[in-house]
Each structure stands twice: as structure tokens, then as C-alpha cells.
Image 1 (cartoon, rainbow, N blue to C red):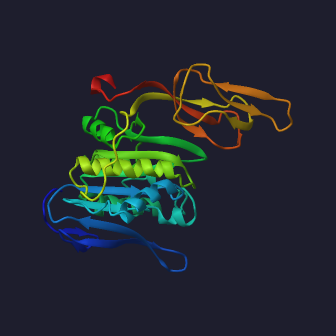
Image 2: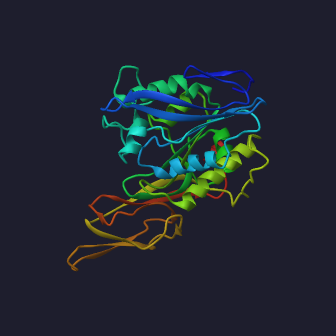
Image 3: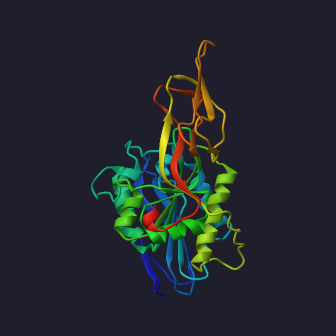
Length: 330
């Protein structure tokens, strides 16, 4: 949407040059109190693309909320052209309850594009998809690891899409991970609507990590600069080395139940057979070493103090490159 016309979002008019917060009200608490999702919209007078930044699709993923909050607080969301729409918390119910899911037990990121008369989560997805998403030319969605699993900063993109490769390289997270769209996910819906979408993963749920947040905020600045939307008053972070592109990966799982003692940091490159962790019993009788089954990068670590047999402990790349190549190479 690169023209210079007024936008009508949720029955509110937003003209070029306007700054406006619109409340997306969709339900009430048991107390009849309205539940409102603030949507922060900043429009430049000069026409340009519309960028949608979302976080908090899972209510316990705080890093994403903090990334979008900092984008707003630092006025990074005031474009020189086009429009930036920020939604720091899409799942307000989950955020209030420090929970991943909606009160109906559903994962919002598994019910898109939703239905008008379905569950609460499905209704939110439906109205969001119908009334907000069509305005977006590009989306950036911010997530963290769940269930005490810590994700290295990474951008996830669908394989075989050259524009997404370019944007991921511009964002410049340490890792770009090829990840097929999951049916009924937000990213899958964006893809079907033809909206290029970067999904950022970093850190773990119910934790705010300043290094992960910085990776996210810096990436937003780089993308906005690339799209010629970033204010000249905002410094563009220098890009680091090209992201490591991970095309295939595997989970290293616990062979036994017990206490988990991780011996290596996330982001690390390891060799086959390298010592990663030990699993012990509480009684001092058992001690099992966990080693890397292949050479690769550690992009996720389970930080739970205890694990059950079969639990995922490490997410390890099996195929990676140090630069983004052509579709045929991916």
C-alpha cells in the first residue's frame, strides 16, 4: 500500500502524517471490562510501504513485546515515508495470565486465519486477518522459545523465496533458519496473502534478555533503512558477518530422565562428539554424557533443570552455509 490515501482501520481514519493509537476491542473479561489491544500507527506524509510489527502472539513471550516497545519508545516507528503499524501484544489474555495460550486453551498461532463464529482465539485471528493484515506490505513477527528452551537470535523464512532471503540478510540476525510454514499459523496466512514476513525467534518465554532484544531492535532498524523508511535521526547499526544460513537441523534428545547439566552456550559451533551436557540422577549413582551427533551450530538449548527421557535438549544444525545463496543452493 504505497499510495498517499487515508487508511480506514477498525472504522478509524488515519491520514498521511497522522500518529494514532487505535484500540482493537474484541472481548470482555468476566467482570465485563473491555479487553483492548492497542495498535500504534505512525504515517509519514510521503507515500511508501506499510510495515506491520507484531509481538505477543504467545502471551508469555516477553522479549518480542520488549523489542516492539523499544521500537516505539525510541521513535524508530516514525517513518520518513509510508506507514508503520506496531502491535506489541496481540494476545492480551495470555499476557495478563503469563500464559502462551488463550483462555480457551488454543494457541493463537495455530488458528489463523480464524473464523467469525469460532473459539475466542479463532475470532481474534479472524478479525485481525480481515481488518488489519490487509494493510501490510511487509510483516515482522517477534517470538521466543517456549518450555524453558532458549533460542539463539534467528530469522525464520520459507525456503525458495528470494525476497525473504534478501530481507533476512538485511535484518542480519546471527542465524537465518529455513522453516516451512505451519498450517494455520500467522506466517502461513501472510504467505497466502502474498505478504513477505520475517519471523524473529530469540531467548525464552517469561524472560527479558537485553542481548536478544538488541538483536531484534537492530534488525528492525536495518530493514527500515533498507526500505528507505528510517528517520535520519536514528543510527543504523553496522551489519555483522552475514547470517549463518541453516537449511536442515535436528533435535538432540535425552536418553535418560534426570537432572540436566548443560556445558555449552547457545550460538556455538560444535564438532561431532563434542561434550554438550550431562544427565544425572538425584542420588549420585548415574552420570551420562550428552555429545554432539554431528558438527553444527547450537541454535536452541533446553534450560530446564530436569528432563524426561526423549525430551529435546539441543537444536543442532545439520546443514548450514555462511552466506545466503541462490534458491537452488538452499
